[in-house]
Image 1: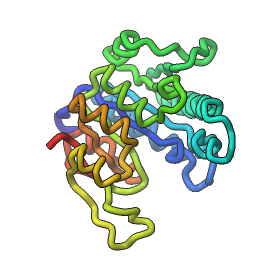
Image 2: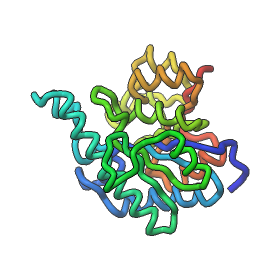
Image 3: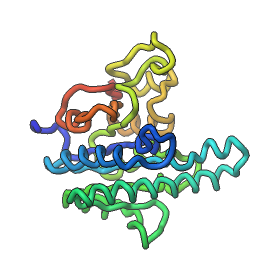
Image 4: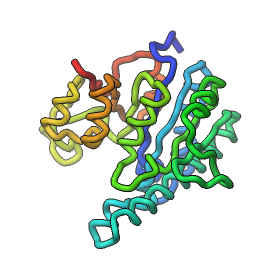
Length: 239
């Protein structure tokens, strides 16, 4: 890999990315491919942290819409992210990658409790750190957790993995006339209500000048290419 413009990155994975074509749960083939790409990047000396969602197992917002009390539904969603984090950790460690899971909800038998300084130290030692359980609070998404953790650990970019090759003016799966954006400002995303990350996450990134790259996770090698500085997907910045 060529010299990377980044020293430390945060990869945001949705839970849905882990289920492949199954429709629910964890597709071990998919998670193995993701782990292989993370291993390649980490093996080149890049410090990499991961925030992972839980939508492949349980979606708190959907459950709340059907009548479940919102806080309880969100806590259940947080626990789903822990399952995904442990699955990714196991796959990475089977590939010889030193990995730590840090949870925003204390569960010492399964994961370390999130401590910023400890997370940074793990990264400095070239361990992959997986942040689970979102922010530990209901009413906040894992997008917001990704923005928060990225800023806390000093990541230089958020790599937002999706099923399409960037941000479009509409859903390209449903609208063939949708236009892809190569570059957007944070204000563009907010004003046009583009589904990049939720408004809280975008606002946090905007206030702290943290760039976001939205890319297609399903194309092999994309994580490596972005870390190497190649122009892929859609870049969201202040300019």
